[in-house]
Image 1 (spheres, rainbow, N blue to C red):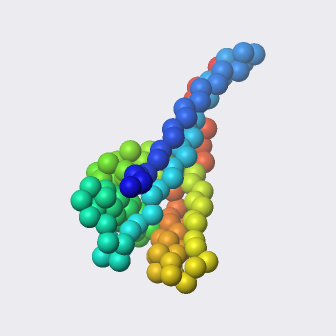
Image 2 (image 1 turned 60 degrees about the horizontal axis):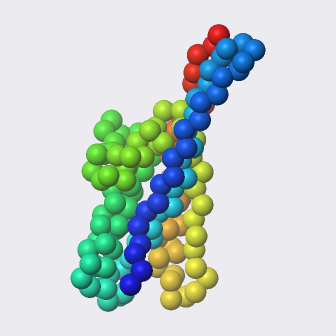
Image 3 (image 1 turned 180 degrees about the horizontal axis):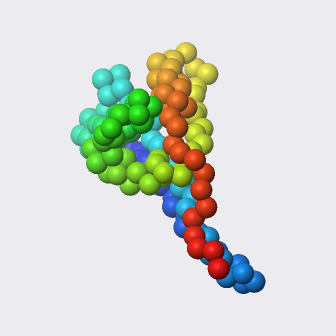
Length: 138
């Protein structure tokens, strides 16, 4: 059986202008989220079922975070899952987010595709913050 999981690649960049001495830093996060799985329909069991349930739980927690942010709630539940806790800095402050959603043209995957598109629409309603420069001027 194939293993499914989320993948997070984090690149931190620090730059110094040799002429002015100005320092700038930034972070690039590339995140590939495993898709949710309807475990009743897929018929998985054992370790694959535990893995699918863990993926579904973390995606649900991400949905809760996105909903709270879209509503501008006073509390955003970043600590409800490892995924959302790790992504907290990427989802707040001066971060910018771009999301690609893959959907299937197959009628048999209609519900998963619709769910993905609804999540993307909810995420599109989130305002993260104004862009700002990070670092020190010379």
